[in-house]
Length: 310
Image: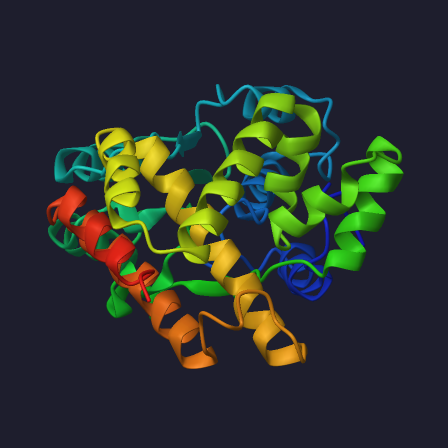
């Protein structure tokens, strides 16, 4: 490859990006979709540096240093802070795109664009249709189905799926050395490099994920709706905890789905049929969708718990 992306996997997508970089044939907007903590934001940040660096992403010049600290005057970062992106914030982004830039390009990085409500997405759409000057938008999303089709049709879309467990494990061993908990981390990460790395670097993150997995497994192994509702009461007021729970639950159910399709004696096979697991996977998606649309969070989560009863 031409550049050091410092990312695990996604070779074909990165090679396609490098072709456009080599020819300086940039699209006015890119949308990077894929699972949470799969590497999308890291790729967007690296691409921003490549676009702005006059020395082929040297990592040493003023532009590279300023982007690393997110202080570059012509590179704007809107990170995911767990809150929805208000229409006034979209208008502020639009205003900044019309300012005079000191660099050849103005690059705007927006994490998880699905945080924009429909009216904010519609407002943003007008700028995507007629982007001012040499503005390049680098957008990411973990939930492509929540991004308006009209926005999807006006961007260069790259999808980054999960990374093969073997590739991820080899990378982690090479980078961090052998660890006794390595297999467990790879299993819980389910192909998400960012999550795996966070669990290796932070014992609390690993312990938290392990505890969540244990709770989810306990919920699926037996009927105890009262206990499940108590758990929902504990987390439903904290959006971060809800997101962590839904993310871990989705990964756990995906693992169950894989085992049911590839094993003669799948985990929890006596309680859940393949159809049950598919339905539960769909319920998880609907729960997240309803919560993001400000439907009663507690009610949505409790309804999900009901689906785990047999």
